[in-house]
Length: 220
Image 1 (cartoon, rainbow, N blue to C red):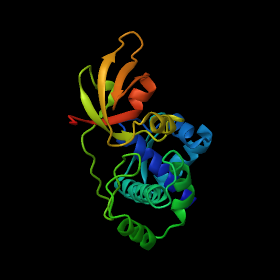
Image 2: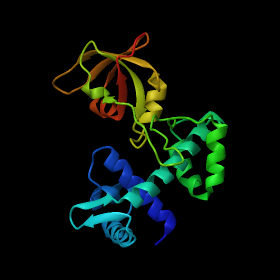
Image 3: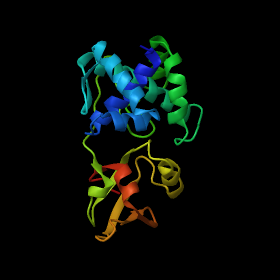
């Protein structure tokens, strides 16, 4: 089994499971930009290595060992993202792809040193929690922006880094992590939302509202 490719698959399977989605052949193939046949082959290899449970036509779920490996990959990835944004000052929309390229080259000692250098951050630049050295991971309860109703306020706490163009858009309109947003109105016809961000009022569509998660109850 190609170790690097296997790690990428395990991380994507974990991301899907954490989001409550099924890790089917088609969905994982789309995320990895490969053919369904290649994904099926990898699923079978991961199953032989005891890292996933594979059911034909249903996809895979991580075993305990598979989850441990996936969390180790995510720890490296998210710490590299923090280094790229916090130290090298690269824009948050560019660091996911760069971390994909860099993460496999880092031994554990370097990852641990990065964590210390960065002050033991809890999340990546997009708000996803960073597993600790033992693979423990804590995620505060969040809601999709789309779930809020008129009059509710909340702080932006997590942004889906895999939605093309979303990070650059949010940066442009000032909806970055920690920013307080207020739902002023929801259009029941097309699900667009009128959002107050500081002194600005925006109208956002369902794709943005589903891609942004918030911590409810944020005050001014």
